[in-house]
Length: 86
Image 1 (cartoon, rainbow, N blue to C red):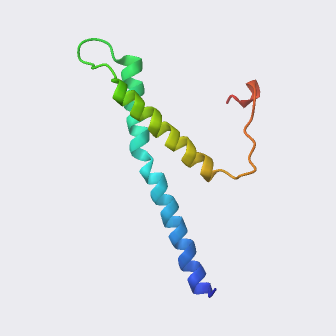
Image 2: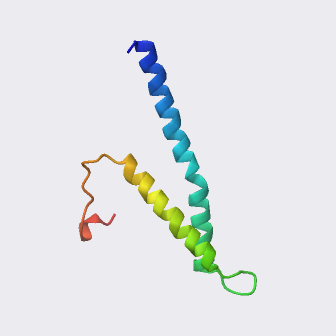
């Protein structure tokens, strides 16, 4: 492969990776809104979270976890036990 071709390929991979990360931003915004509703949503101004919303959030969270897992090195061992806490 020519060096110029390798450079274009590397740039394309980086761009695609960045696009994948940007695609997760709406997920994080939605998750935060659901959390705020659950934490502070009291009174008549807040509608309860529907089963459909909860199901969609769980499905999206699974996609998010799968995406993050694919970005991590394959040989990474997650910490276990109390020492895993920040």
